[in-house]
Length: 344
Image (tube, rainbow, N blue to C red; front, side):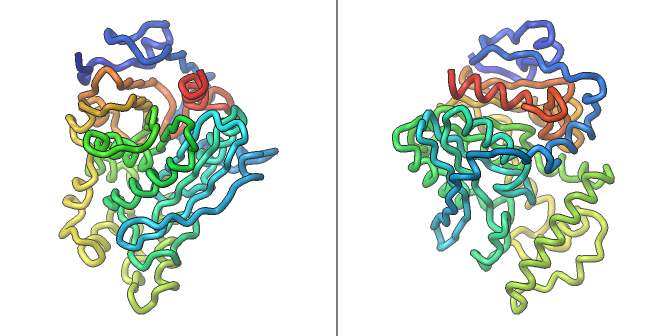
């Protein structure tokens, strides 16, 4: 039996204690934030607020820097926090222009570490102060190096079960990893979590420019990253002609034809799309978590995916993008959900 686009577990259904017609992988608890926490922008903004990283964090206390040598000489930077209990290894993949130190990554990692899991936080190329490790620019289409790095990180598990959790673009990478498992393997991989995943970049990208908060956030992050790359490799890169652009898509449209193998922006975005049948035969359980009020990822994109009995699609009425806060300081709903699966 396969789950089609209508067989999701909705926020309304879970609030009533009901589930979809297909038997779920685990019980899905309600997500009912207080009314003042429900606005999409509030949920989204909280995901990155640095106050959530304050306080004791034993995961950071034992963190070890790792440079992973990938195919074609690519080097990716990560941080590994071994846990003496080693109940599991959780590999965390951040969103675009995030890093291993993004608030949502650190907060989720601390929760998993405190419950006995080792944690590996991976940076993509040109993320997390790793601009000097590779001459080439980061593009979201660079899947092979991310898969290679995740596979090598999984080898650190030392026999413990491995779980992957990706946020936004990291959710997209997670789903592309799931797609690749039809032919490839990652040792002892037990579950893939995709939180607010990008499914159709061509449909999602314009939404960033429509909301001032998203546009300002990503413009600031991306232009700072490009300036850093240009300073490191001034003989290769000159981005001065695009720094005055005030929209993310405007920069993208000028950057892609010059610095990538793609002729235009649409071709580029479609190159890392997750197509409707890509996950149908994934042998590893998947949990896709999204919200109807996500201002960046249209829920309709995710509902086009055909999933098998190993997968669970969870759509909440609220949660924004990477939010899902049950209280101001957390834990988030997905923290509890992941813990339920990883440690039970």
